[in-house]
Amino acid sequence: MNSATFIGLAEALEQVRRTASKNEKVAVVAAYLRNLSPDDAALAARVASGRASERGSRDEAQVGYATLIEALREVTGATEDDVSSSYLKHGDLGEVAEELLAQKKEQPLFAEELSLRDIEEGFARLRSAKGKGAASTKRRIVKSFLLAATPLEGKYLVKALTGEMRTGLVTGLLEESIAAAYGLTKGEAARAHMVLGDVGAFAREAASGRAAVARIQPFRPANFMLAEPFASAREIAEHFGKTAYAEYKYDGVRAQVHRAGGEVRVYSRRLEDITASFPEIVASFKGPGPDFIIDGEAVPFAGGRPLPFQLLQRRLRRLEDLEEAVREAPVTYFAFDILLRGDKETVDYPLSERRGLLRDVVEGTSVRLAETTDVNSEGTVQSAFRRSRDLGYEGLVVKDPESTYAMGKRGSGWAKLKEELDTLDVVIVAAEYGHGKRAGVISDYTFAVRDGDGLKTVGKAYSGLSDKEIGEMTSRLREITVRDYGYRRQVRPEIVVEVAFDSIQRSDRHDSGYALRFPRIKRIRTDKGIGDIDDIGKVRQVYSGQKLKMEEG
Ligand code: AMP
Image (tube, rainbow, N blue to C red; front, side, top):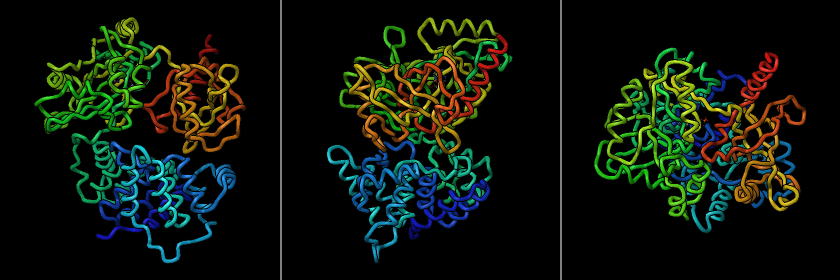
């Protein structure tokens, strides 16, 4: 089957972007997808979701702003000023590409139309550009794309490469579109999508008529189940109203471990392959045994106690000094769930049964089961919570013994309790040089939460990081600078941090209308992406919660 044109996809996405109607967005995408081959459908769905690679693949095709801007300037002859004034106008690099490409002097005369397969091949080449010279290889690939692209194609190419699609086609709508294109029920679509993890893989299976029988498979990370936050032991006891399992809330890196055919791989919450960072986990499952997929937390741990989470950052970031990082912060994997055992999916079994299967799988290895106690009242939750804090854990995750494993959901089957409730996960959007002893480093960060498709700023933090972290932050922020105003720089929103704060006030200093009081960075969340940050709803909720408390007081 011939591959469809890329312009067809760009036009469909442009139509989706232009309408505010959700039904129309779904209708456009469904009609578009219906005529594609399975491989084309996979790429198209992935691009529509703002990805250039399959979730869980070891390598990324995404390209940094600096490289994209450089390639754009080379192709169009635009100056630095042209780029930044266009960016100020649109706030979107894809739209910048569209504007600049329209002014490009030489338009390709008899250029061949780009096909979806061409795009996929280009993405594959971007994924394999590594090590020395990777930056210039990537620039060359992007440049050849942009030379062949029409303005509209350039726009969506750049959007796919930055991951900033902004068409309002949220995950749920894309899922609905795929269901409508291939005649799946909502339930079948949701399940196939969850099981396959990646929207492209889901579209491919749907286009081949195999989505309804999609199964969880080793080496294809499934979406993680998440816990709902609760404010007190009393609320948790009331929520369950029966005996539940209270597990320690381990403060490490959430990780899914897959084993099949003697091979072991580890995936992060963002479904990235992080096997190389955790040689201990791989080693504990060496040798023969059944295939499985288990869920748990990799925790820096020594002498029977957890070590500070920060010690893990180093091993996640760079692998050159991995051996030293492993020595500095040995990891124990605490397993708490199982999704697959042999060729049986176990996600629909009740937790009480999954526990038994999990115990069998980890028995005799250096992996440990998450510790658990039964709780059935405010008092028992409270004392389990205190014990967890005394031992150095973050709190509790309390679980319903009858609950199934709800992939990708913040299910009510899991409830989390932390002491310091008021933290927000936010993304850094701008940064400034510090003062005094921090004059040479970028140490002041303006951050934002999500508001629909966009971002709204809620505060500025000056403290919380070590000098070393600030140093590293400085070079990362330089790399992702969109516009440099000298003392201040606007950056590509991708660094997620968890901020603690004392309270939230109404304020017109930030465009959200709210400001965090005394924000401090608790940690850099390398495990989270921009899709995981909190939204303005959570800010409003905390704000009105504290108002209530004040009124009660
Ligand atoms: P938070 O990161 O504060 O949103 O809390 C949710 C996270 O707690 C999960 O994503 C897990 O990484 C982590 N966690 C730690 N211990 C457990 C546990 N026993 N069960 C489930 N999740 C846990």
